[in-house]
Length: 479
Image (cartoon, rainbow, N blue to C red; front, top):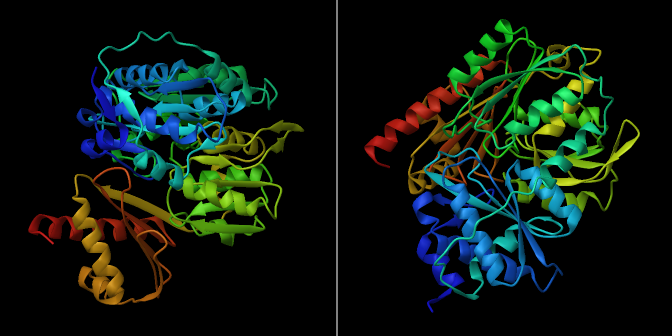
């Protein structure tokens, strides 16, 4: 019998937590590493909660099924029952698990490339905190090495409950006459979305299902996907296009013209349609959230759902209706809320479906284009450099923080100067012409992200292109 230690096994794997879950290369997530994370997670919360079952879900990555089997084996080793919900969106798994008051594990790498994967952990009361992450990494439980993987039988309960959570809020003819395209690709929720929109009266057109994993990043939509949406909108006469990232917790929606909406603008419109009082949003979100003056208070946090959720605890001490969202569009409902005189329960984890449906509800009398156009016209754009060494990213951020004026002048911003600097997460600088530049290493992968906000989209794009071009150049030369 080969006995392993969770802390040693995890440390040897070199896998760490990013902004949303443990992430790494597929080859790092061996059966024993998956088991180590599972043992560490469960043992770290057993003294706080009483449960006999642990739920598991996966995305459509080729590696996810075997990882789930290893997690299930570890759960069985602990004398607990593993409930396997198969391929489904992360928020669907989280919602049902919270209702059943049991923990769950989602096997997903979200939007990162298919050669990588990850694990997301939820306590019975919701998404784990940063403190919980450290408890998992520091756990020293012992477990038997994995030598065989169990067969898993899919339970459809979570998928059914997730769809009912939303269809029960609206009249079954709310979307009558609407033509909605579902960009399915390899999304974990692709088998749920079409029937859900049809149940609300829409005519659904399935678009581009893929047998290979497609790493859709809702914060950095590719030019090819932008052109696809415009073509689909015209070809099929669509009123709306809906898609998500790989695990279905970040939405990607397009208006009547086939133009993808920025995730934070979608979140703003959703929160407004739900009459949310106060918001917690990451520092990278569009400043129109405050300037639109539709909310009593807005708190800015570090990037990552754990930070947004942590702020909910503070806001709920003063307010009744609380929510948040991220620049990637994932909407987090921090309190039970009323929609159409019906209670929708809190779901403090990223969700893609709620903002899409609330936008469609708001667009019953106005077009989506018109809903967006009446907002303060601040335009954000973002992009990333992939396969960019993390140590280089931090070296660049360090130099920029030390002397922002000199740093941005070197890139070419000579006619403006920084007038305010925010180091909540990375470096976010407001320039004297009111443009905003935000530089940040990714917390999930070796990537460097650049966000820009300006009074017109062309200028935002130019800023990002100019900065990333410079960073690519010094990245090749060595920093």
